[in-house]
Length: 286
Length: 259
Image (cartoon, rainbow over all chains, first blue to last red; front, side):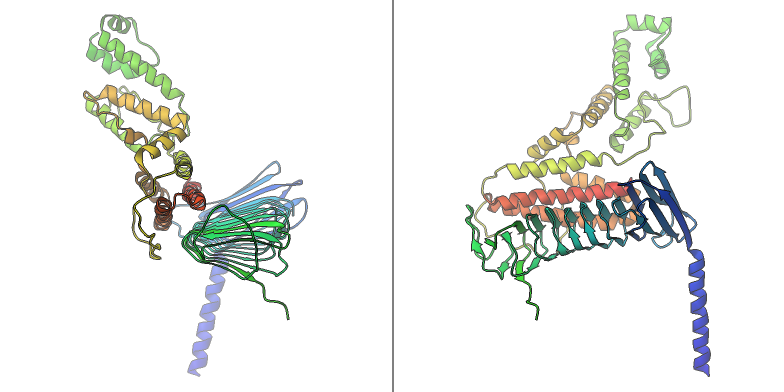
C-alpha cells in the first residue's frame, strides 16, 4: 500500500511538473508569403532550428519561447525573411532558449545560426548556411544547392547531399559525410575527425584536411578517383591497389600515398598534420 | 584676450569660429595661432573617419586623462568646457576592429606560406603531445608580422591611429617616442584583446573561446616548427595557411556572436 501511495505521489508530482513546463512555454507562429528563391535567415543564441520544405509560396515560422523575457523579432523585407531572438540580460541558457521549426519553399536560401543548436535541414534545394558554436548540425537529402557549415565544437553530419558546393569548417568538431558528392566538397577540422562514406561521385574535387584528427574514407571497389594523401607526422593506410602516379616531391615512407583507381573521374586530396589517414574499401554486400 | 583666455574658450569656438578679439590675438600670438591650426586640422580629419571603426579604449583613456591634466575637461558636468576631441556619447563600441585583425592573421599566414626560411638546426621533429599546454601565441618574426599587418590595416584605422598620436603629441610636453609596436601589436596582445572583448560582451563564452584559441595557436606553433625543419614541404605551408584561416574563423565566429 505504501509503495502504491508513493508511486501515485510521484506520478502526480511528475505530471504537475510537466504541465508547469508546458504552461511556461509560449508558442508563436509567423506566416509570410514569398516568391521564388526566397531568403530566410534565423538567428537564435540558444535553441534548436529545424528547416523542412513546405509550400512553394509560403514561409511558416513556429517558435517556442521558454521565457517571456525572450523576444522574437521576425520581419519580412521583400522576398527576405529575417527572424532574430533577443533576450534580456540575466537569463540563462535554458530560459533564453527559443526553438524554431520552419517550413520554407524547397528552393529557398536558408541561413541558420545558433550557439547551442541543434541545427537541422532536410529535403531542400537551395543554398544553406549553418553556423553554430557547439551546435550539432545535421543536413539530409539536399541537392543542387551550396552547403556551407561552420562550427567551433559542434559535430557536423551530412547525408545524401549532392550536386552542389559543400564547405565545412570546424575548429574541433567531427565531420561525417555519408553519400556526399558534388563538384566541390571541402571539409576542414582542426582536432576533429573526418569520416567519409561514399563513392566520390564523378568529376568532383574533394579535399579533407585536419590537424590532429584522423581522416577515414570508406569507398566502394568501383570508385573512380585520383587519390593524394599525405600526413606530415601521422600514418597513412590504403586498402586499394592504386595505379601509381608520379609526384615530384618525396615523402617519408608511410606518410603519403598517391595513385588512381578506375578512370580517376574525381580528385581526392586527404591532408593531415599528425592525424592518421585511412582509405578503406567498403565491405562487399553478402 | 590672453593666451589663457584663448585656451579656455577654444573648445566652444573651434568649429564656429571666434570673435574679433579672438582673431586679433591669433594674429599677434604665433603659439596660439599654431595651436588653433592644429586643432582645426584634427577636427577636420576626425569628421572623415568611418563611424563604424573606433580606436582601442586605451587611446581614448589616455586622451581624456591628458585633457583632464591640462584642465581642459573637468570631472563634473560643465557644458561650457567641452573636451576638444571626445568620442560621441551616442557612438556605440563595437568589435569591428576584429575585422582588420582577422585580415591581418590571414595576411601573416599568406606571408608565412610564401616566405622560405632557412633550415633550423638538425633536430628530429618531435611528435606533438596530445595534451594541450598553456602556450602563448606563436611569435612570427616581428618585422614580418608588422609589415603584413601594416599592409592589411584599413586606411581608416591607420588614420585614426595617426590622429590619436598627433593629439597626444601636441598635448604632452615631452611626447613619448612613437613605437612601431603600438601600431602593430604582436599576436599575443591581439589574442588578449580578443579575449577581453569576449569577456565583456559574452562572459559565459570566455572559457570556451580561450580554450579553442589556445588549441589553434598550438596548431600554428607546431606547424611553424615543422616548416622550419621541412621548408620544402609545400603541403605544410598550405596547412599553415589553413590553420591561420581556422584562427581567423574563430575570431569571426566570436565577432558574429558578440556584436
